[in-house]
Image (cartoon, rainbow, N blue to C red; front, side, top):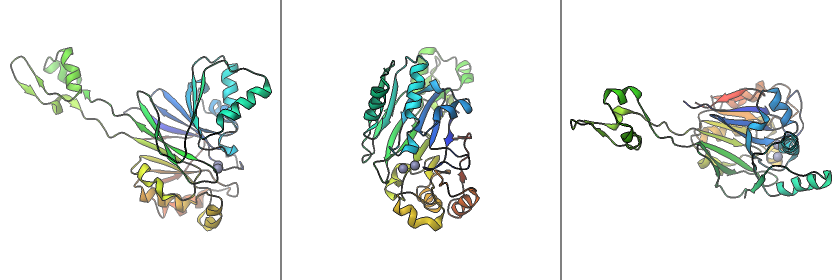
Length: 305
Ligand SMILES: [Zn+2]
Ligand SMILES: [Zn+2]
């Protein structure tokens, strides 16, 4: 199975505390890497966790509260100083282009590699990016300013042919593409060997959803239905539900309720308020509603199986 997972670089809400840092994480799929959010110090955290800073070609920003993007100029400038030549793409709500240009204008510096900023409309769910292995959709969220989550879906792969069967039935190279596309194989004696005997079936595409920051928001349910892994913000414990509603954040029990209603396989809680030193209660409350839940640990990689 192709390696698919997410490494948490930061799990704090706006005020970093107790060694937790602002939001950022790296999704990996096979050899490709994608950055979601870029809180202050993201570049340092990547090197701390042995993630090659230069391995990122796409950055997805959820919204323009500082705890989700104050590291962006750091990473853009690091690439400049490292002599990067590969193109970089940044996806996010309106304003990112202006912020980058203003920084370059006042520092009188010049960007030396191609940088494209894709403005995302946070009110509409669309496929915003794809390459050979993965596609990314945005998820409209409910927060104090325009905010979007991101859904990573692995692309359907063609079925694999079982090597031993190629030898056993003496299958010529020119028949292999047809078999991968679902055809049966007929040998020179006229014997038909069914496709199911020759191939390993395609598994259902795996999915990872990132939903931060957001108030409790049921309209996201259809988009995240059945995802293998959901990262949902969990700024507060359940007794602070009024505060969560007031500031467009979620409690751990609200996150767990979303996970239950969306039938996700596993839930990761993150974006913790600085008022909580221990996160034990956060997990205890959530697990009452949704069993397969973890509070994220920074530096840890969660594999999607
Ligand atoms: Zn935040
Ligand atoms: Zn926010």
